[in-house]
Image 1 (cartoon, rainbow, N blue to C red):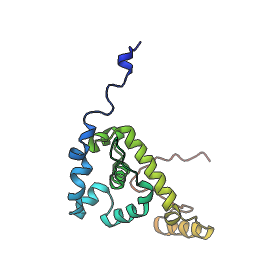
Image 2 (cartoon, rainbow, N blue to C red):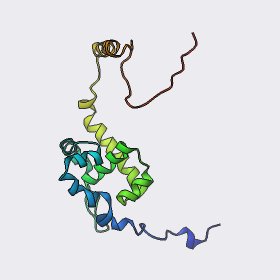
Image 3 (tube, rainbow, N blue to C red):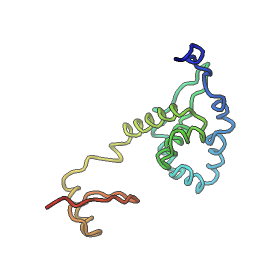
Image 4 (tube, one colour):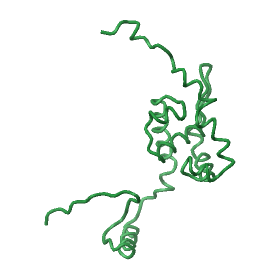
Length: 166
């Protein structure tokens, strides 16, 4: 059984986390990356202009207020952390060491940003297709790739498909 001393939290945040503003990826690289668009694209997997447009459209849902206890995480940092997760597939634990944010904080940020992206952009990015759209897409796949009755594909993934019987 754990003693009361072991049960108590030893520290409010890990000692490396407060160093975020001096040593974290966002604070050390962001302004430099903005001076070099090709490097910005390599880091974020999105062009700087697209990033700025995305940030502007999501900004109201990403803004928080600083408190006496701590400064909030900026909308830019929240979006970069999310894009880094989505673009690289890194684990929250590895992003924790890169951005010097708690893994659970990163988890909440990614979920929240994805939710805000979906709420604000789904109608513009993914309008509900009509029947004639599906037919046109299927015809395009049939002509271009010789895949009849196909309405979508994943790029960069190899998927083994077993032919069903009969």
